[in-house]
Amino acid sequence: MADLSINLAGIRSPNPFWVASAPPANTAYQCHRAFEAGWGGLVWKTIGEPIVNVSSRYSSLDLNGQRMVGFNNIELISDRSPETNFREIAECKKRWPDRAVIASLMTDTRENWHEMMKRSLDSGADGVELNFGCPHGMCERGMGSAVGQNPDVIETIVGWVMEAAQIPVIVKLTPNVTDVTRSARAAKKAGAHAISLINTINSITQVNLDKMCPEPYVAGQSTHGGYCGPAVKPIALNMVQGCAADPLVQLPISGIGGISNWKDAAEFIALGSTGVQVCTAIMHYGFRIVEDMIDGLSDFLDSKKMKSVNDLRGKAVHTIGNWENLNLNYKRIASIDYDKCIGCNLCYIACEDGAHQAIALVSPNGHGLGPGRLPGKPVPQIKEVECVGCNLCSLVCPVDQCITMVDVSTGKKPMSWKEYQTRLAAREMKAIPAHA
Ligand SMILES: Cc1cc2nc3c(=O)[nH]c(=O)nc-3n(C[C@H](O)[C@H](O)[C@H](O)COP(=O)(O)O)c2cc1C
Ligand code: SF4
Ligand code: SF4
View 1 (tube, rainbow, N blue to C red):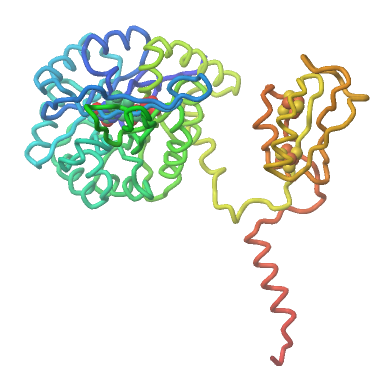
View 2: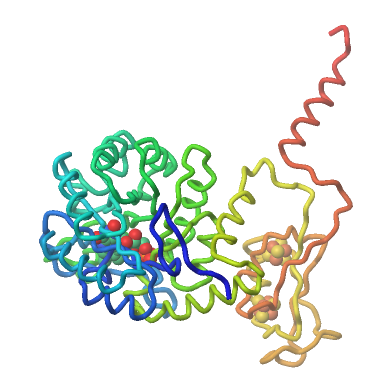
């Protein structure tokens, strides 16, 4: 069985699954429940000057009956005192010495950062995470994303923290920037040991059209909240890969954003994360989801003959590059498995109206009859010459593996846009007479 343990900048945990700093990581009671379920680590709900929250505070994006595809909150950091939080961290660490307990911190002045670092060390926390990401409320007070959106301020504050740091420091980045690698580089320059990303994304998830006010509704008003959950995973993956590939960052990464199962976690690790953190999926389904995550990742690593999580880390990072380097002579086309086709014709409509008119509806003669398809009903047929391999039909088809994309030979050597431009320029040079 593969070794699931990780070591993130000196912080060890028996598996890569950590509870993210959020409501599930608010109290010692929850920390015990999380560790009993099997979580490898937990980042405490952000500790700072205790705040006052509003009611209500959450909202969501539901899609076609699936609840909380995206989740939005206008909650602030911990509403409990630092004394209580640090006392409970000490209690958890004592009871669970093999798990990672991280203190998430947010404060303002240099002296206060030094004080928070000392209290974190005294509590026995394995490390700290600096919350430079909260996109509502705290940023209006000059903290959270107000810090994370300015690389100079990140560098200054991480510098203050490092003056007092005796345990590993993780800088948690906000995605509410145009280029997250600039934030990551600032953290690295100031001496941070690791980064974590992403925190939540500025958002309005829905407008209550009866009240003419967005949710979450607070006495006739609302505010932009932080977006997370499955919908943000693609954005988070992109940012994690960007930081992992940047030669000026090169820091261990704790990946966060929309992780709900082992496969999501494996994707983050393949794109450069050492471990992952989870919030929304726990708020939706509870701590026990980690059981499937551990089993699933372990089976996957075994199936790929990987001996540890480390063997997976970063495996896909360098397959991502600039568009100009992609092979223009590679071609794939759609292929339909008629034994699976249910005859819904969604692929035909999508290609006809939204793509390249490369699917015909033809007589079913000679094709198999998939479940639910009516005898004699026309079937979709790929016009192979017209198909540009855009993937759209395979994405809209409701039946798993009914439309697959298959490689076809073009008989041409690989050539990128960059090479094409170089050849074009060389040909033009040749065409110019020597005396010109
Ligand atoms: C209700 C709520 C409260 C949160 N509070 C904090 C917090 O106190 N500190 C922090 O660093 N991140 C906080 N987050 C952000 C999460 O830690 C995490 O970065 C984000 O939710 C993305 O992960 P997910 O898609 O798994 O939810 C909060 C998120 C939610 C939903
Ligand atoms: S891959 Fe694109 S172009 Fe080809 S059949 Fe499907 S939708 Fe049409
Ligand atoms: S979308 Fe899939 S199931 Fe529906 S007709 Fe096309 S191939 Fe068949």
